[in-house]
Length: 147
Image (cartoon, rainbow, N blue to C red):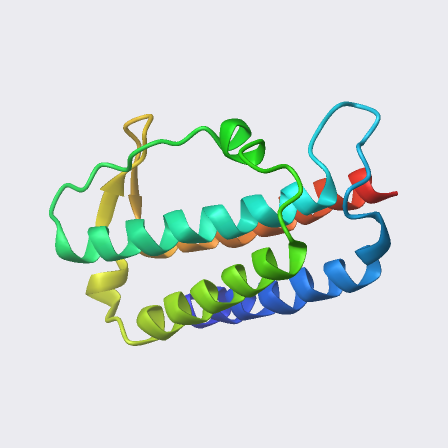
């Protein structure tokens, strides 16, 4: 199971790059529903990978680690026109670093847990899997915004 999740995490990088290539000319287009632009979706993925990187390391080094929460909508408007290329490179670099660590872990390490802001306990491997799904969900959101 872990190998498939790691492969999906690596595939997420290619999906983010493909998305940016296809929609490069409409990154700043405001969606009619008032949601995030495609550029904001990419910036969010970079921010979320920062969070994953920290949480992964904290789960590995702290017993009973409790995730801190962050307001993704507040982050999205810090600078609404963040450079998509920087967001992609940030996401890619962090994702590759996270994969490098994850691939070195034992099954026991992958089963370490942390507590999400709602109190739910989650293992490292399950968290990483959810974060890969999270990437795809926000790319779909970005497609809707950019069309």
